[in-house]
Image: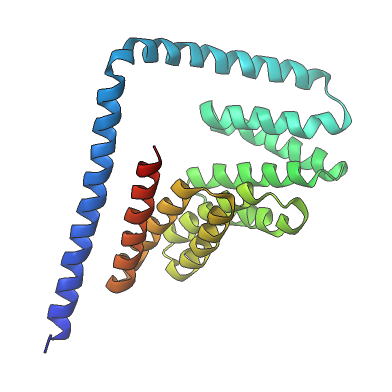
Length: 231
């Protein structure tokens, strides 16, 4: 008979092996990509330089459009500006997010309102203000029945899972991840599913539920291999 101690030890060893397999698989992919693209490094550097200029130009263009915007034009532009600032100078995004919320609420633009709530939740998640992040991300999920925006809501549930995980609310995080996986499956986002399964594996590992952890790590590997085979 296997003692409970030895059984747990064996499960931990299996988990370590699975994690190593995932790491090796990902490293192999990274190396393969690097070898395929090494000739284009100078082009890539040049592209990054141009991208930086493009982002700045795009933001200037959006700000110019916003200065002339009226009515239902305001919320979409504010969300686009907020997104640009979230990539570059996150604190500056908040003013435009709030303007998007106000305008979208006034003109009953539920998709724009939902997007603004998501950006605000994302900002607070990144800055470690988890209670505020949870509040705004949850608003996104409540609007799903109206917006039908599966992609955005799948991102919101994934971010909610990250917030609950950071707060050590593991059961809530698991619940949100299961919803994430269901929505990612509906929209065919295999990469998103794999990441969610990997996070589930990590959470169950933290909880000491090693068999469930192994199951989700195996799902991660299965999906990752399917993605690789399609390329």
